[in-house]
Image (cartoon, rainbow over all chains, first blue to last red; front, side, top):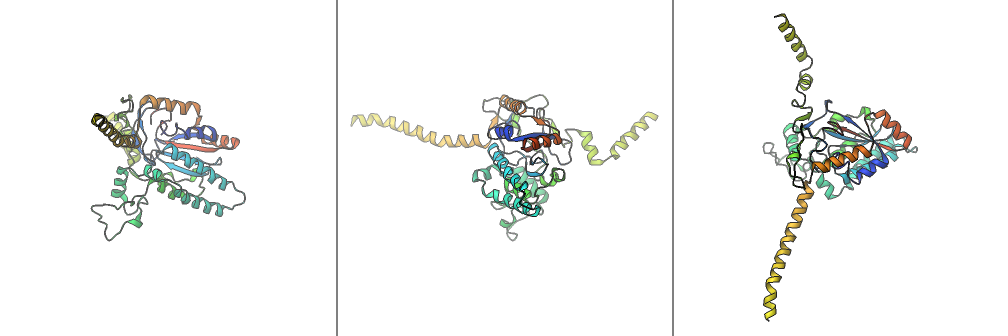
Amino acid sequence: MRAVSLSQEPVFSLLKNQFVCGYKDIENKGYAGSSRKHSPNGQAVDTTNGAGPHNIQMFVMASDGTVLTCLPGYWNSKDLASELEFAKTLNAVWVDPGLNRDEKNAKFSEMQRQHLSQHTPAERKRSEMQHFDVAYEKKKRFLTSDVFNRTVINPRTFDPVKMDLPPHAVKTCDVIMHQRMASRPFVQYKDFDVKAYSDYGRPMYDKNEEELVASNGQTTKQRGEGKAIGNDPAAHPVKTQVKRQGKSLLMRAAQYGIRAAIR
Amino acid sequence: MRNRFVARPLQSAFLAVSIAAGVAAPLLHSRVQASPVYSGQVCSENVGRLTNEITWSRDLDKVQQEAASQDKLILWVHMVGKLDGFT
């Protein structure tokens, strides 16, 4: 993200001139996903919009901390720029003194849905969900997930064993994003349910970038790359184990230590 | 008549090259568009530009104050890792 779309035009100039930027490392947050470690001078790829939603969430907020939009995962520079511009129009609604809160909320939701009609077929194509994320959704929560467009799935002909879905049965990530945002009008950042919002697909995301051949014919692999980062047992085994099993693990370790000392 | 025979091999070769180029170019183009790989050097330069030319704060309160005083919006990125380090 940092080496591709954030640092490329038209996003770079937009950020530099019209936004105040900041970031937060979510490595130890419960909602964070994981990936293999990548250094700033490792290789990168331009992937699909919305890929890796557990690992990156880009919030566009008003200066009072009101969330105007949130883009989960990677986003193509051109498409990201369009969403940044869209956020400005949402902010105009938020600060409009002529509208009450209900009117603002209704307008927010309507604008989120309307914006989808402005997405080009090319953007839709760039927003197709990664096949491993689709497989994860099918396997883990087919009946409850909002990533499936149920209007095109015929329950009479659908085979739940084969799980062959008709075309357009999986929503593109841009649709998921705007639909989820539409139900979260002008929420304060501190109240934003990041976990639910950014949850689709596999928690682990990696494109094996450093193993691909770059346009200059070379590949880069830095020291430390390949190891996991984020919520993955390989990234920080003790921490993750404690998260899963609670303090009992630490208690057991302490008891074992005391017993060993007595002996 | 003789000139026409001489010209034909050249025409055929030109036609073959044109067809090959016409078929190959869109394929190559679509492959590049599908998943271009940015080399480590390009990524390093891009990350350097991003972190040197734009101030990235890790203090949201400060970011909000700045945004209010400059009448700007905020881009606040959640990421696994550090902007200028491992991600």
